[in-house]
Image (cartoon, rainbow, N blue to C red; front, side, top):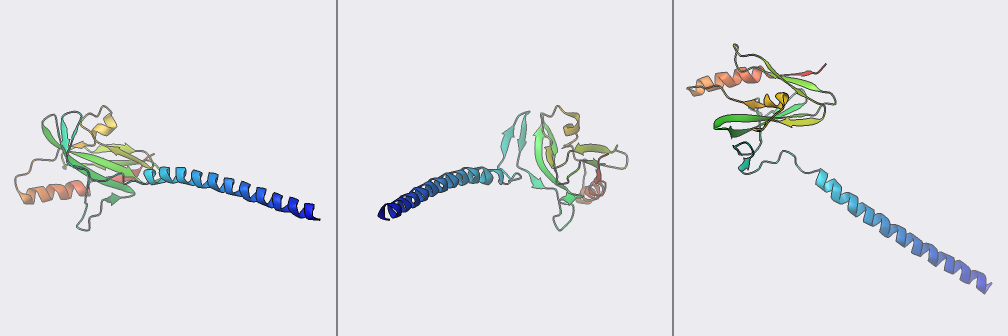
Length: 172
């Protein structure tokens, strides 16, 4: 009887030791996974200080492109951002678009009634952005040269036209 009790206690202690080993392995795995999860959840649109970019561009960081006084920067599931830059000596606005939809969209814009409509294809769940070193025709459309205006009234009228002529549609 004493030998049986001893065997039971020995088996119990072995099981506890194995359980502790499994627990240590699980904790190590959780720690490794946690470090990747924290890294993946960083803010992609964090504003940065002025930095030099390739292609002779100086930028001040991405800002919300506000369509109204409430600060709305989203149209039909697409978030809009801009940053001021100087590309090869010309002052421009670089545009960043983040499509939160599960389908591709076309983002169209028009600067004035006389100007052509410019369309950009944005794949589903994707961010695209303009750059002074763009070689892609689609991304080149995200470099915007603002119209020249002489007064604040002209600037406001121009902005109103541009913002009212930004259209987001589901791509075919």
